[in-house]
Image 1: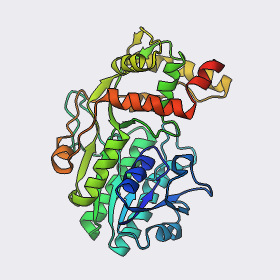
Image 2 (image 1 turned 180 degrees about the vertical axis):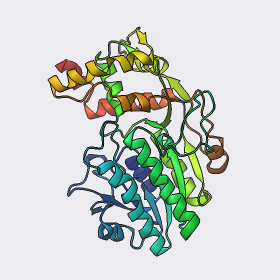
Image 3 (image 1 turned 90 degrees about the vertical axis):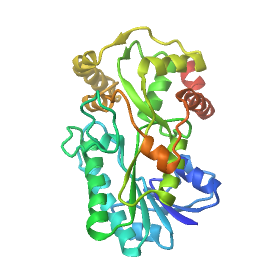
Image 4 (image 1 turned 90 degrees about the horizontal axis):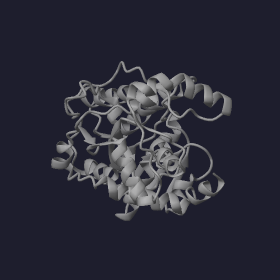
Length: 333
């Protein structure tokens, strides 16, 4: 099958591309820039260079395909200073959806668990939650708006689309690395003196990719499927990471409110060192998780079966070692 993946070089995209190639699909990837991203190097993919904001590039990317997986997004948990988060996550989604609608193509739209209203946190997170259209975080709000755009087009114009909402991604193929990946690497190198008392509903990128392929094949048009794992406290995740890597894990665990008090300090240090802050207000907002997550709909309809967090962290460790990010940084520390 000929398929198109937007954002195929990203954290989840490169895992999806590998899964599609493994099952024998011909994969075309729409990627910005003129070079092949490191996450796709050596893979037998056809690259179309261009942005999801460019209708011509999108048309070239989807022409002749039988399925379109839309993952392209800008992940920014600070401020949308230039409007690019809103543009890519909402208007880019519109461009891809319009191209699919014009050609009668099936589309899998990648939303996020952050697109949903989590509160009250004591209740399970599931597909019935409303969209977080008024969220304080630009990224969360843009993902909610992008999902609404797709569901409106399904209902009003007959777009053949299904929606998936992944959780925080773990496992290998974290080429950027992601925010969680940077945290694990910093933890390995002893750069975290304490842990915040937070949880995250993690899911292995490989399991999410497999569920996305299942959603393309048998997901119900217009439906949302939550692709997360069970929430894992940071202390538990760090303990497993320490067992797997030999890293010394800090014993001090601070409440979330301490993180809010420390925001001015972390931002001030970042400005002085010209580095990204350890955390920002929106990073803290993104770290809030429900006490439980109900992904039974995806399990029932798509066969979604997320693997244990230990297996994901073990494979992530091996991946980071292969990239040379652990030994090299530890020697320099």
